[in-house]
Length: 122
Image 1 (tube, rainbow, N blue to C red):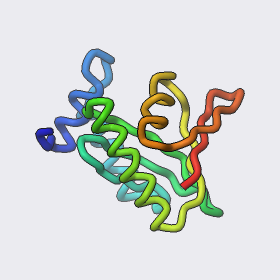
Image 2: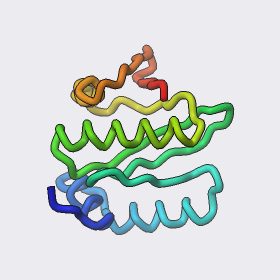
Image 3: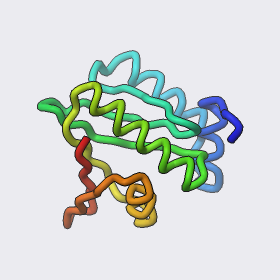
């Protein structure tokens, strides 16, 4: 696996969506610098964005340029980092149902709610 820059990850992840990776990068940079609850973690060629919601809970977003196998490894790394940091649960919007399969490949159970939100335990 070739290690991509953050810019390359965003370019590849947003390819074909019509979204501008430069605008997203600018937004992320602003959030990191102005929102004390917003952080970014990189694992492999995946960027995880999370918002600390308090009481051990985070809301998770992600952009990836990884293959499913590398993404499963990145999810394992992210889960471990969150557990070490003291977080208990993470919630994310399920935009692609195939992601549930990748979480399972990583050995991570996802509880799916009726509101199209997934929850994982760290």
